[in-house]
Amino acid sequence: MIESHETIATANGTYGWSNISTLLVIDDEPNIVFSIKETLSSSQISVISAATAREGIELVRTRRPDAAIIDVRLPDQTGLEAYDKIRLIDPRMPVIIMTAFAKTDTAIEAMCRGAYEYLVKPVDFRRLKAVVHKALELSRLSRIPALVATEDSDDLSADRIVGHSPAMQEVYKKIGRIAPQESTVLILGESGTGKELVARAIYHYSSRNQQPFLAINCAALPETILESELFGHERGAFTGAEQRRIGKFEQVNGGTIFLDEIGDMSPATQAKALRLLQEQQFERIGGNSTVKTDVRIIAATNRDLSRDVEEGRFRQDLLYRLNGFTIQLPPLRDRLEDIPALVEHFVKVFNRQLGKQVRTVAPAVLESLLLHRWPGNVREFQSAIRYAMVHATGDVLIPEYLPDSCLQKSHAFPKPMGDQQLIGHDALANVGPDEPLYPFVKLMDYVKRLLADGKPDVYRHMIHEVDRHMFFEVMKHFRGNQLQAAERLGISRMTLRSKLRSLGMIQDRNQPLSDDVEP
Image (cartoon, rainbow, N blue to C red; front, side, top):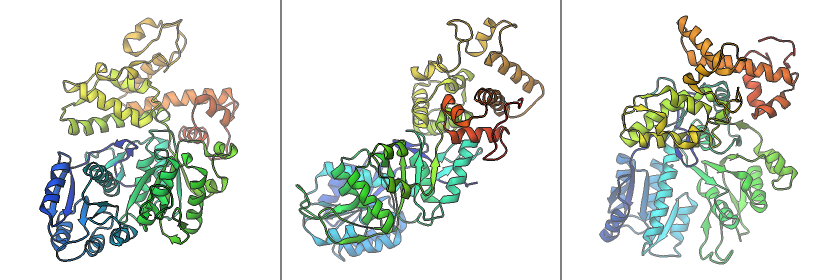
């Protein structure tokens, strides 16, 4: 099993805690340095500076900044020479080259060698701010590890993948199996399941973990911009292409690129991506010369790529290339046994981030979280806990603090009597002793027996009991047909098989469930 690694983040944020970022500015013009500090210094960004290349290089060694801005012309050496020395110290640190000459070959050469971006003086501070924030986010993705959370871990310095359910154990095994390899990886899962975190975990456990890591959302950029962003372009390739641009595949040479939502990539960009996967080479837009590179690609999508291939929206040969190793992430509704651990983790995270002192969670809160369907998966779950923590005024999290969406329970269980919905301990009084075997009645009896016997780990026993009866009845209804059972349950066939194996209903991958097995 994987040891603790990096915090698992969603597309819009991380599960963990991030420290203040440090930006280094190497420039001998005091006015420029002053303006950058005034523009960028904040509670999240600390700006340090150096007037010479030698001083800046020493700060990289001693302070290990998260990103740097380097002027091309420095008193003791060129910015390109300084960049080369900095890259030897820390190849993952994003470096922004700043020049007074818009057409300088030095800045373009630095980009070819892996610099993150270059800016032209006089500085457009709005663009500078946007570029620096992106560079710092890239640095965070490269440096903050994505780790599998251990049950006794209180360290919030990393982004963590939380969950010990059988479905998540399968995910961890696959990460551990593929991370040391050089293979392309395709991560499948609904939005909010943590695909970027898994990609970062693969990166951090790989042999390329000291080289850059870059995440690009293919759905967030228009076709022409995405193609230029990935492959670069030559001057004059299209209207507005005033300079040669070095693409990310060229910049991140030796590192790892995560292509999120690759199913939204245009056909033209798919063709170039296929050639890159096959030959590790490509041409810039508007160029004829071949650029060779060495990058590992991790891709992810929430789409059904096989269906997209059938409908002509995705290249079959590209799918074959991407499909060499696949990791399927389960939706949160298929791993409800992980919810208590997720609650505990996020309460710790937001206690620290928000300065709260929440010590415990009311049972009714956990019940509400277990009953919700979580269409937004862990991303939605994280937002719900943060919402509750923001509104919390004491040391106990109560249902009133949760978002309204988490309090709508009517869809979670069937209605036992007419329109009456029975939820929680108080509702049990409305169920007579001769009522049919309603889930909560059986569960409460079972819990009482566990408590009376002094059994540990009551929650896991309870979940196992529920799953044992439910999956047996579903499989019996469909006479062991796993495809039909998975469709009716609303889960993937892979998740179904994992559940059946964990419950002992199938012994190996090919053994069907017998109709006459009693639970």
